[in-house]
Image (tube, rainbow, N blue to C red; front, side):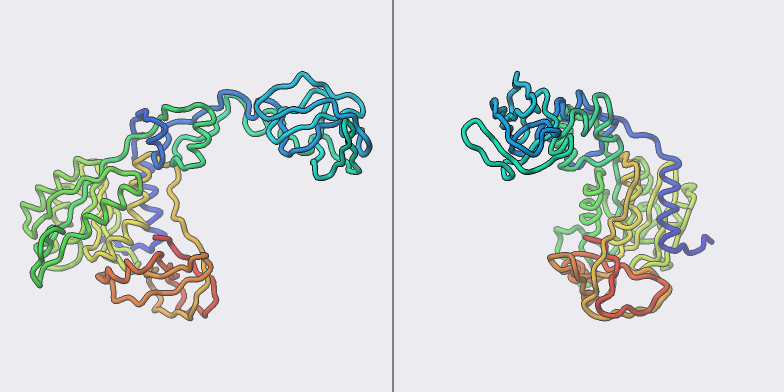
Length: 398
């Protein structure tokens, strides 16, 4: 019997196992317009120095710092988007706009707000250090250096960098294929009208959305009935994907047969229980050279266990170098108590400014309405039992 893992142990185990045995995904090229959210397949290098020439970061006058303060002869102007043959000599200034190249001879910029001008004469009482308000050539990036690192998700700011260096065909990792298999005789398709003893298959839709957000390609299988041969057939199909996510059938009930089927397929179980709520009966292992997660069947448990554990596996298989759990902090609006022993991920509402958090009334892991009302999970330490109002607590955004 595999012992129960703490949350920290379980997450470390997932990262260690998948990172240690994963193969680097293949790389494909896509257009920059489709790159947002994909994982960069290799480093992208600067095609030239950035900036390629020294530029002003203020509107003002380009001067020699050693001549300040004093009166200057204005010998011309230079704007962004043009070069200039001008050269500043002693007590000479060039009117300059933000982004314009620094003329030869100048080594500082005086902001226009700090000057007075009459005709071709400019006066300032300011001093300046050499290089003040100048963005030096190559100060942002040198030609040939990596400006966007492989193994990172492509964000809007990385889109900006890729466009800056002219990378319009972007090398990205292939998305990992993730099979999703819901189990249970009580589960019917979301489009059906369930009987009183049935539930719609919300878990498959939820997991597909979470897999997409994690960078994977979801493939939803038919619902596996509580019958050995049918469950085994579908699990074998699921193990042809890069990762298999099972929902339900991993508790200790008479008809919870998922673990037995996996064992008969030669599975190695790394853990079968994690000290969290929701989601204690949580299975992670490997069969036929594919990792799998057996997630609890209650919707709240499925959502939480994917987000805090299985998501990291999807990201690693998709080429992400360092999966992260994006915890934030907010102040409790009221005191909070719980029974120690489990790390809890409970639905909560974080204020619009992100400063405070209020636990939602919650009826347990089947309470989907509470999950839908919430915008975060309150992360509750297993070692404490009480937090006063106003104390900072970690939250996991939904």
